Structures are given as C-alpha cells and as structure tokens.
Length: 446
Image (tube, rainbow, N blue to C red):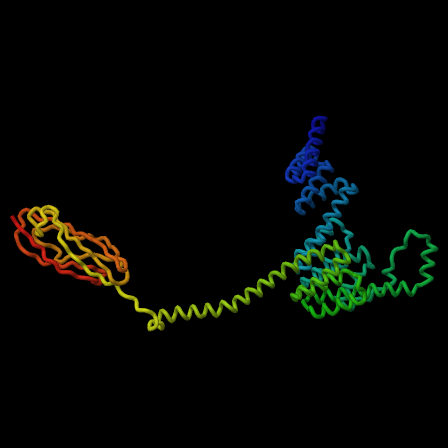
C-alpha cells in the first residue's frame, strides 16, 4: 500500500469521525466505508461504521460491522465494548417483545444476543421462557440446558426446569455457593466453619424465591392472572426490596387493565431503580393502553347514545317513505302553470299575419305552485298551410311563484290566403300536460 493511499484512507476515516461527532450518521458511514474500500482490515473504520449504525438504531447493520471487527481483532477494547452494547440492546428488545407476548420475536432477539456473547446466561434463561410462551417445551428445555452447560449451578434455569418438569431433582444448596474470593483461604474457611447453617439458609431462601418467581411467570404467561398476582404478592412480602416482582406485578395488573394498580407497582420499581429499563418501557405501555381503554369507554358511551338516535332516524325515514307522517305535514302543492299569448307584429302591428311577414307568438308562462322542471312547449296543429314555424325543443323550468317568457317565430308565405286558424299551445312536463291555451291566428293574404 503506497503512502498516498494510506493518507486517503486516514482522511476518509477522520471525516467519518467528524461527521459521527456531528451526528451526521449517513455521511459518517459513507466515509468509513470509503476507507474500508482502501483497507478491508481497517479495524477503526469497522468500529466507526458500527457506532454510526447503532446511533441510527440500525442493529442489523451494526451487528454485521461489529462481527467483522471482532473477527479481525477479538480482544480490542472498543470491539468488546460494542459487542456488549449490542448484546444488551438485543436482550432488552427481546425482553420488550417477551413482555408484549411477541415470543417468536423475543426468541430471535435472544439468539442474536447469544451470538454476540455465547456465555450470556440471562439470554439463555429468557429464551427458554420465550419458548415456553410458544408452548414449545422441547426448545425451552434445550435453551435451559445450553445455559447449564456453561454454569451447571445457574439457579434461575434450574428453577425453571423444576417448574416445567417437577420430576427434576431439587437444586442442591451447596452448588449455588459463590466462587471463592481473593481473600486468604483461612478467612473463607473460618467463615464457613463459623456459621455454615446461616449460609445454607440464605441460599435456600434465594432458591425458593427464585422458584416462586418462575412459577408466577408461568401463571402470567398462561394468562392465569389471579394466580400470578397472589404468587407475586407473596414474593414481595418475603423480599420487598427486589425490583423484579414489583415489575411483574405491574405487568399483571396491566394485563387485566387495572392501570392504577399497575402504575403503583411501576412507581415502586422505579423508586428502587430509576433507570430500570423494563419498568420504564412498561410505564409507556401502561400510558398507551390506559388511553386506548379510555377511548373505548368513551366510544362505548357514544354508541349507547347514538345507536338509539340512529334507530329513530332510520324508523323516521321508513315511516316517511310509507306516508305515515303525510297527515301531519303540509301538503306539497303541485306546479300550477298558466299561459298568456300575444302576437308580436313588429312590421305594422295590426294584429294580423300578413303575407310574406315575420311575426312571433309571445308566451308568458306563470307558475302559482311548486317549481316546474323539464318543461316543453307544444303547438297544435303541427302544420298550418301557408305558415312556417318551429317550436323550440329545449326544456326549461319555471320557479315557484315565478314566470318565464318564450317566443315562437312564424313566417307567412307570399301566397298565403286570408283566413282564421284556431291553435292550441300546451306546456308539458314529461308526458303530462300542465297547461293549455287556445288562440286564433288572423291571416291576411294579398
């Protein structure tokens, strides 16, 4: 690798760090990856990519980056720290899914946590509980046994196995004694000899409480909420300073929508441990579910009010359509159209239609009833010798208490003969005759 390439690689890495510190994560990832194109084994760039993805909550890509870094430098301090961070992230997400009864998703998260730390006993234990929630006892036992291969004395898993399979041998207290400390051997031996029964009693009590908690969680997973509540209250009475039973009791109360009791238990848990993440997440869930419950109650109340009103409205519409209210409502007046006819003779205004003359019939249509729509005119007879006319075929309306003016142009031939012709003008609505007026045309030939 030339000096120039090294400078370019380092330049991209420094830009990536600057963007990362400035929280411009996309740009940071771009420059870290450009550095990796020049040197695929550049540990610091892999670490930078992981940190940027973690800042964006993109755990999948963060995991890919950190596993590559761990393959290249398994003991590097920052690589180990990022693996632990990502492991804990997957574990906490798994616990969130577990508490929400998304057991399949929880199993996957715990599997990823174990991939990052194969000795993570808490993840094996949580995974066995998740499989139990899926009613897959074979896989639940398999996960528990994986933990026991790492630590055969791990009490939570031993208690879990005893809960789901009472034929399992009881946990031996001696197996749960802590590892010898760095103190001089004589001191440790002295303590053991001094009060061996007290140590045994403390171990027995711890194992007993852990068994009780596992049983309570089994009740909770099986939706046996009354049994879970009773079991958790006994544990709290025996050890009121343990945060976990308060958390699980809050979870139990949330499931039965006793939100005030659930919030009380979460408040107790957070007073003991203000940063206890499961309790913080459950508190958010309680707030959300409480709001949903209040909305459901409000909607139910509205339905109780609106449903009778809707029934009344529908009944009213049906009754109206069948004329039940016709006797109580004012009668709707039909259109009442009348026609006035005059002859417009602009040439000489003598009241006659003279030969070779253009005149018009002026019709004033008055309506004394409701609005008349889609009206047409008809003139009878349809033809008159010596006269040419065409009745407009466009429809029109006459509003209530209104009037409309219409004109029919008439042209007389030069050879028209003198006579009187009776005509009829009609107003039609579809095929119904609304009005008729008779009129005499006075024709005067040359």
